[in-house]
Image (cartoon, rainbow over all chains, first blue to last red; front, top):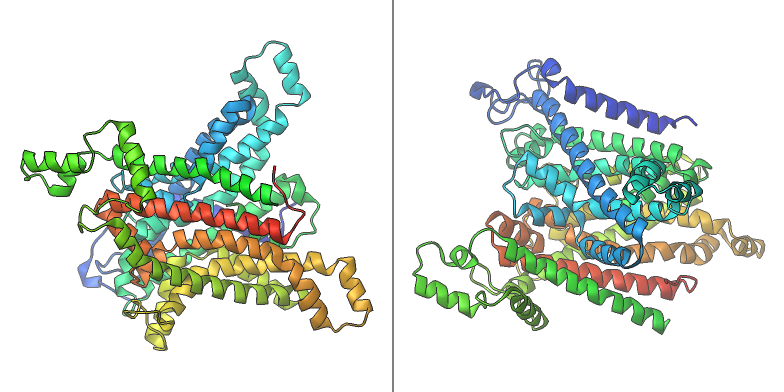
Amino acid sequence: MKLSKGSQFGLYIVALMTLVAILAETIAPYDPLQVVLKDSLQGPNFKHFMGTDLLGRDILSRIIYGARASLIIGVTATSISLLIGLIVGSVSGYYGGWVDSLIMRLTDIFSAFPYFLMAIIIMTFFEPSMISVFFVLGIAGWTNYARLVRGQVILVKVSSYVEAARSIGAKDGRIIVHHVFPNILSPLIVYTTMNIPGVILAEAGLSFLGLGVQPPTPSWGVMLSEGKDFIFNAPWLIFWPGAALLFSVIGYNLLGNGMRDRLDPRYKQGGESNGSRLVNSCQRS
Amino acid sequence: MIRFIIWRILQCVPVGLGISMLTFLMLSLVPGDPVTLMLGQHASPQIMNNVRQELGLDLPFFSRYLQYVWNILHGDLGRSYIQHQEVTTMLLDKIPITFNLTLVAMTFAITAGVLIGVLSAVKQGSPWDTFTTGFTLLGISVPSFWLGMILQLIFGVILRILPVSGSGGEGFQLQYYILPGFTLGFASMAIYAGLTRSGMLDVLGQDYIRTARAKGLSKPVVVLKHGLKNALIPVTTHAGMDFASLMGGTVLTEMIFSLPGIGTMLINAVSRRDYPVVQGVTLFLALVFVLVNLLADILYAVLDPRIRYD
């Protein structure tokens, strides 16, 4: 089954963003941290395609480097959530009984805090930095993974191949890692792809509030925060980073939907409109 | 039905206790001595001891937790380290602003979202339907704080027709909530549009709709009276959960539009390390979230009798 045109477009955007992030040093026209006060607050022109900020730094170069921060945080924080969710969910689903009840009630408690609110609260205990954003967003987002993994493990653990592994004396840890995990990968890959845009937006939100990546490190959220005081006389300061953020999130959302169409059997039959798919994905995340 | 409601309420009790334990732990895990944070490093040891005793900080961990729960049940959420005010009083001051903002956002999101969704379902496959798909994608992808700033620029600076910051002082002044409400509700509007569209498409294919058409009823009557009524069930239940999410998600919108609500209070408390305020706001929002989810579940069961939970 091929990816739909929309999802292919999403894939191209994500690939482009990843390339930009990796090749930032090569393609950025200027040093993103270089202060040139005589070029302060220049509008878009031939020398600075997207203009400059208050300190005369080239906005295009900062956007390019900002892609790196977004990508690193998006992938790392999602991996941390995935890892926690994988451990908690598989223990809960595999052992069942009181262990399952206890873990699921804990998950309910953590789920009572909306994701972004949870991230802000945990951030209270950390000094704002890129490293702390990894952990905070990673810790704040584990509950949905745990629920997803638990559900999948419950389905898989009664399979004949798991029974067979148990009957030849395989230990629980081995069964979970070698027989259960490989068979629950598809929904996890889909959910992980769909979760990345939420993490990217949350990182930008935290940085915008001054609780995430700290200046002068280029991040789209930091750029929006720095630009908000000049919104009326230098609107390009907020336009470009916001547009980059929007473009990137659209790419991940489209790709996520395509991945789901490919890997989730419930959506392979088609029949559901793109709009409904997007809404469902949004509700899930 | 009554058994389901009682069971659902009972399920909230351990979650509520868990939330209180988590928020209590939050203050206990804070590095440093809370009394030093409150009084500063130069306060005399005698005064520090007195305050420590007064706040019950010299008690064992579990006694302090019981004291904390007891205080919560009596509406006492502690005292701000910075403003030296009761957190409950501060919260009560800010709740109306956040509540008004959430209400405006919800009203806007549901009205516009349902309208767009119905039109899209009725004109399935048309350019309008394609537009709705793009709009839904845009809605869930656009960063709310960026949208807010763009709206400030367009309506506040270029067109000069709406205020761009503040709440307008005493009382509810709608014009101050229009831009923040749109900003906060934009993503939800897209979700309601998609939900209504898929709900309507499901319903419009049902036998009773065909029967209504066969009886010779006009299209608007069939769509609005027979179709929309049933298609709105998922929208109604989603609205319950959405209200709680929006209330917890007002932080960025309030900051952009300088609205002095709970979100702004939380961010100020976080940046000043005013832990009792962070604790109080967190507890309040989490409990609102649990309560509204409970109401949404009950509403779901009432609206659709087929729905029951184990």
